[in-house]
Image 1: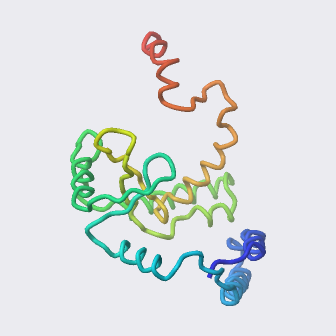
Image 2: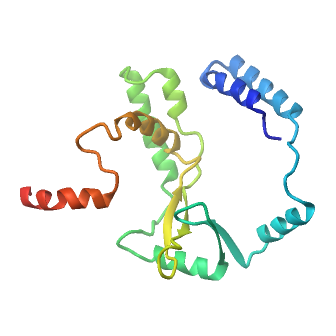
Image 3: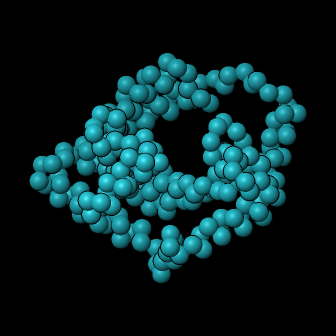
Length: 206
């Protein structure tokens, strides 16, 4: 069951304990488990017939349900057509490379080595080290979102890195960079903005 606003606030206020000592971790887990057990489901705003229709759509392997690339629109695609477009995209050897082996574990070991060195050099503290150290070995997944505003609705590739080796590190760096966005002389909102204002100057200076 989803937690209430009060429960969310309580869990948010306790999030710093996650990287604390084992006793604090265990206490926090028990606290959250108790909250989730006592939380009540909100009243459903859809009928049984609508729920059955959603269930049938979800389990229909002949269709793939995706968010559109832009706007809050849901797109239903023929699964065979979707997989064909994704496979054609992945055949582009200028963009994608077929690997001989899974590099996940090697990347994991390398990142651990770098983080350990940063901790020993006092550039990050123990808590940050524990937060950034990769524990999962999930391979990033690719999927496509249809560009329904363009002819043929081509797919935009999206990489889902949640749970991957560098996921926490990426979030950590993004939080550092976020305050700088829009506050420097070198910030551009889009690549088109960059191209319009700088490509000619860049080529000339090179």
